[in-house]
Length: 246
Image: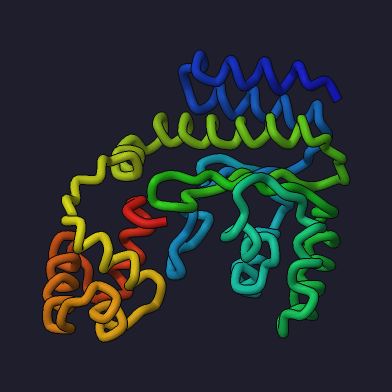
């Protein structure tokens, strides 16, 4: 395939002034590459419908409804793999990672169901931000073999088009995603927070820091207040999202 097409599109995204123009040119690019279907979607929470978070996409008729009705999102190997991926990957490669998973048979049935709807293979490219995984770009349909260079360029396109579409369609959500972190932690609080993220108890942290468990709990309460966290687990989750710990 002509890599120049990808480079040109990547360079022109910022010059496109409307969502319709971006989607039209992107779909033209995908048609040239042989991809039948795609989706650009924000990362859903467990209780959210992924279709409500779709920035752009086209899927086989009825497939999104089947996917939701059969609750495939719970066992979809591509989505589960996405949670750990730092760059784009191929659908077919994910089943290998779950060969010992108790839901393996159901995963295979889902893949068969997908092929029955024309989704023979594809790729997913994650989009990360300060708060972790924010969304992804999925390409699929017929079997298309991408080179490592093309994979890297599509990774760049995923990030660029995701933020551009979000800017044009929902600037309020965009502002929330890129909002600055205004949480001031003391050195001791940061130490306690990192040990908490490692799964340590107040008693274990107190021994390492050579302070009383009461003092550790006092630090933890201060951390929760600053993060507006409901509990310690919530404090750790928020800290990861905000980039305070890694």
